[in-house]
Image (cartoon, rainbow, N blue to C red; front, side, top):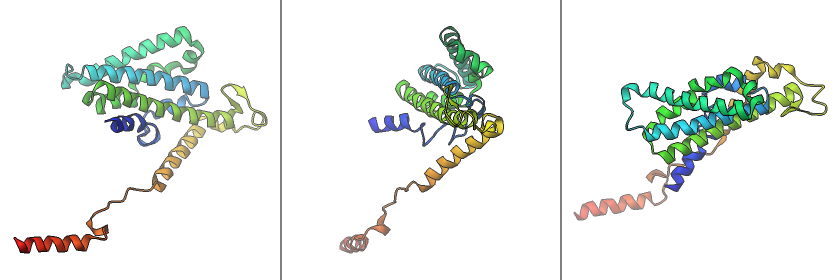
Length: 226
């Protein structure tokens, strides 16, 4: 049980990364990954909404009719997005202002609605919370890594702090849409390469067993004795 829950928690980081493997949430990924601070803010906001929505959908999964489950999910998600917006507006206004329209668009983020439909409405509260944390971490880490690459090489800064040499020799296109797609594609290629080189588990069947002939002979003798 512990092993399964650990797998549920960690699968979203690499094995089922929502951005690089499942290719969900591409729009906010490309739009908010120009600065590392904005990317971290978007990841944290989406993770908070994901955890709350997964937990509540799991709690209410038996009470929500299948015919209206999607509208109910959207209402719950929209509620938590509104709460997160109000919190950021009150305590982190620079991030709230920087994210702009993409903050309320978390409501239609495919990652959140996808985990609600694929996982939360079929599993318990704890498992749904672990799934949300794992997927949120995967989303946040991907955004942060992608934004760091684009900001460092495209703007010559990191977290708003200038970097010597790069500040005067940056590649501006990386902060634009073409650069975003380029970095996004490179990260997906790296993940695919990692999966390709990862050793696969061998299937140890009878054919690969050195004692297969002995087992077959023993089986024949047992049949003859009967």
